[in-house]
Image 1 (cartoon, rainbow, N blue to C red):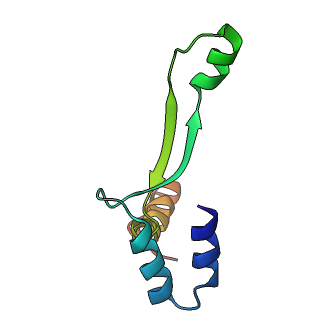
Image 2: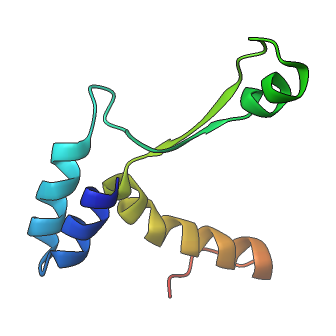
Length: 87
């Protein structure tokens, strides 16, 4: 993930950024941003090997970029009770 962050930060154009993102996507079209092992706290406290609980934070920056305009429009509509408006 550190290497991915460095590469995307170094991208000077959107096509370069897009290429880097596509290389990091899995078969599902998503990438793993972070894995949190919630069970480790309980395992350490009890000395056991269970429970095993993980939270996966996954997404696709390219989809997020496409949705950003739609989301901003929806927020304006919900806040102001107006029809579609874009910023």
